[in-house]
Every structure is written in C-alpha cells, then in structure tokens.
Length: 287
Length: 101
Image 1 (cartoon, rainbow over the protein chains, first blue to last red):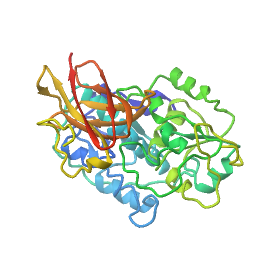
Image 2 (image 1 turned 30 degrees about the vertical axis):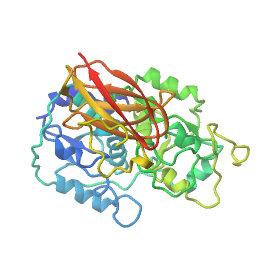
Image 3 (image 1 turned 180 degrees about the horizontal axis):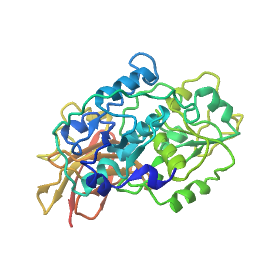
C-alpha cells in the first residue's frame, strides 16, 4: 500500500462528491456530530451500535456486517472514503475494520472532518438516500487483528507500540485527561512496549506527517523492522490510526491492531505490568 | 461560581469542586464568536492531551488536571493561537481566545 492508494485530500473529496462508486462515510467518537452537519452525500456509521456486538465485547459478525452495508447501500466494488472527528481516530478504526472484513478499496480523508472544516468547506444536514445492495464480506483477516494471548507472547520478542498519551502509558492516568476515567483496571503498560503517542503521526490540522517524518519517528524509538508489530491503546481506536500509518503509509509488513488494548490487558490476571516512562523488562521486574 | 465570568459557559451539572475546568470562547474581530474552531489541550511538555470543536457560540470546555496547560486554537482562515492557562481542581479557568487572519 502507499499514501496514494489509501489517503485522499479534502480537495479530492470535494471534486468527487458526485462520482459514482465513491461512498463517503463519517464515523465519529461523538456519534451526534454527523447529525449536526456532514459532507454532502456522506452516510454515517455509529461505532458503538453499528460496529459493536451489543452483547459480547466483540465486533459484529460477518453476516451482521454484510447486512449493515447492504442496508446502507454500500457495494463491494465501491470506493469507501472514511472521515471523522478526533483527528480521524474512529474513521481509522473503521478503515481497519473494513480491511478486516476484506473490503478492497478503502481510503481515509487526510485530516478528516477537522481539515474539511478548517478549509471552510461546506457541510450539510441533508440526509442522502442510497439504494440497498447485496454486500458480501470476507471472513475476518486474522493477520491484522491481535488477541490477548499473542500480545502476552509478544512481550520481549515483537515490536509492541503503545500509542496512548505518556501519562496513560506511565500509569499516571487510566484514560486520556478530559475523557471519563471510568475503568477499574490496573494502570501502566505492557513491559517492553514503546510509547509513540498517536498524535506524533499527525500535524495540528489532523493531516498525516510526511513519510520521511513518520519513518524517523519509528526509527527513533528503535523499531526493529524485521520483527512483527502489535499496536495498542485503550480501546483500539487510536492504535488503528497507528496501524494505518505503519501498514498503509509506510508499507510495514505484519502489523496487527490489538483492539482489546489496555482495557483488556490491564484487567488480565497474572500478566506483567510496567509502570513509569520506561518500557521495562520482559519479566515485568525492574520497573 | 469560582471565577466564572458573566456570560460564560453555564456550569450547571458540573461538579466544579472535583474538576479542574478550563473553558472559554473563541472570538474573531473582538466579539464575533467562531464556531467550528478546534481547541487543542497540550500538556506542560507540549504533548497533545485532548481536542474539542467549539460550539455554535464559539464556546469550549475541558476537564483538565492541576497544572499548566497550553490551548492551541485553530480556526478557519486564521493563524493558530497558543494560550497558556493554569488549571486547579475546584476552580474554573476562563479563557478568551482571539483569532486573527
């Protein structure tokens, strides 16, 4: 993959608002943002209801995903362009999710909703209508999704990149300042994981930094390009953005997103946890 | 109301005693509220902590922690503006951000 295949500019989106086969989808952390105004023609996916199983902690299954996209009018051969607020956190999550279910042509709007608004481009509250389709998903691609046992096995052997803020990584906070601190799990990080906050991937306007800057960012923390990589955050959405950078922009192989992330790992019994600003050792001692 | 300015964002429903609130309004040309501006909360080291878009009336609010923070405001057709602010639990830091082209 490359920047050209996976990222589009706000201008490209504006130029393709009426192009057949291009479907804009807004996905926000604030699920009401779309209702207040969105890019003309864009449909909405609600990450809390559309993309999550409502009983188990897991994604909707293949049949549910097929039903969702069929009902919203997305076809298998459509170019899906995702965007959202919060610097595309949840749009990147949806991007990874579409890839997980095998959608071929997915792109992110560089800078997301923020860049669009800062450019003073038009938003509308008009709801689009799309004819239903018969969408067929693939089985989930296990090569891009990490589960807890692989994460534990990766300690000291693979690249583990924790993209939360430094205070969350060090164990001083359980969630980003400003957001609810509701979890009751232990604070800290997975021993040997390095901290590269998601925000270092992006410019202030939400667009991604250049390939050269991004390469330097991961070289700086001693990423071993011969090793597999697992990215994590708190609930797997900020790490989707890092997964996107590593896989789609930098073309790194064997990168997985751990959607269980800290809310799962930090609640596991018997696993090592490191505190403080340093990665810590594989045995969890010497923190 | 612990320093909340007249005409500022309502603190109804906010337990000010337990929060270190930073809030305010983004204005252009002195008194024109700027909707769709983005205010970023940066910690003491300049690290991103949070970001909110302003409301239709240009208002924003963060629940921060004790200490020094920087608000970086990005607005359409304006240069970014950095504003230093100190937050403390039990008080409300009111900030007015003026943006210019």
